[in-house]
Amino acid sequence: MKKIFSKVKLFPIYSANIGVVFLAVLLFGKMGTGAAVPSQKEIIKTRIDDLRKQIEIYQKNIEEKNHKEESLSNDIEILEADIKKIELQIQETNLQIDALEGEITQKEIEIEKMQKQLEAKKEMLAKFLQELYEKGGGETSEIVFSGQSFSDYFSKIESLESFEDQIKETHDQLEASRNVLKGEKENLVDKKIDKENLRGMQNDQERSLEREKQMETLLISQVRNERQALEKNVGRLQAELSELQSLGEPINLEEAVKAAKYAADLTDVAPEFLLGVLRVESGLGTNVGGGKYKSDMNPSQWDTFKKICKELGLDPDKTPVSRRACYNSEASDGCGGWGGAMGPAQFMPSTWMGYKSQIEKTTGRSPANPWDVEDSLVAMGLKLGSVEGVKAGDRKAWAKAAGMYLAGSNWEKYSWYSDRVLYYADGFKKIMKKY
Image 1 (tube, rainbow, N blue to C red):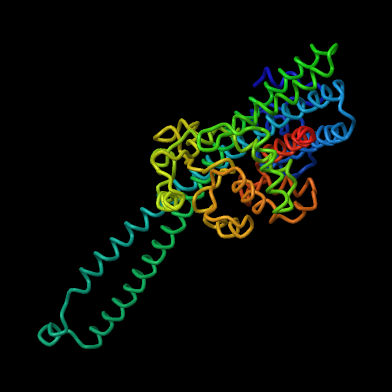
Image 2: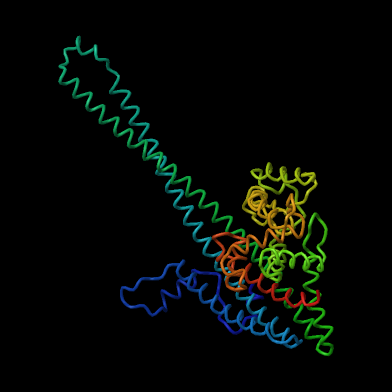
């Protein structure tokens, strides 16, 4: 990573070692007497915000150049700006991962503390129950023969009732603690999945950075043949689109453009935006057609998947789904997550069923097929178009919709995904003029 970051000369290089920065703040920060020392989380947030401002400068520069007439020098300048932007985005992802690692460590400490408290409550409850058993063993008939007064007996009964109240209170506390602990453990799992998703995104960032550098070198070497260089840049997008698969077969660019225009007419979502999402969906560590449902899909989705296949006359054992992205070395199976998304638009079976009737109503065809390029892009258009501003072509709305397509309400953490979608949408807009 240091080799990559050393290329960025316009902005400060941020170390991944937050502790060093924190120490620097303590030693050299201009803080008044009694001023609060910023936490590690606050330091990371400040640095992420700063990076995003710098990234936005490059993004605006790229957008301005995309509106200019096509030329070799313009394309080279766009690539240069994109390379610098990606380098900053890799730094941002590192910081996001650092922040999550800090949260995970803190959460593990909290869970360990809660587990100890839970065990203490269990021991207390067991002790109360044992004492109740020992103190409450006498029968009422014993009083008649023991000479014990009834007032003493009823006093003992009241004492036992109070004791039982203590037991109930301790039991209720124990149950509440169990529920809180369960929620905290689920929250910890979500954070770990989030961290691994960011690592997968980071891999895609590094691949994109390398591709952009190679293309920049190629274009610079072609300065004497501008037309040929521009065609090579277009050819790159064509090659990348062919990485997508539908039922295991590459998607032809002309077919994809035609399908995108078809879906755009029906959903009012720009065809280049649909193609941008389609392109990026293939580049996040999964292969659209490289997995099988029994090995790559969450078992909770199996019945829905088999129902979809049956209606389409497909063999579920032979029908491709996305592979599991196995980059979590800490997981017992080396993966820690699930694939199982279907077709070019990468819908999970349960999500597809939520859109199925709407797709069929929109296209007038039934049954809707997630592996059909046209049906999948219509589904994508319906989902993206539900975000306000998308149909009007608002780029901020596009960024939000693209992020939500990947991560739902957690979309802002994956701004890289949205950025790549818009980047490829601009590229496809140029290509579509030829079709």
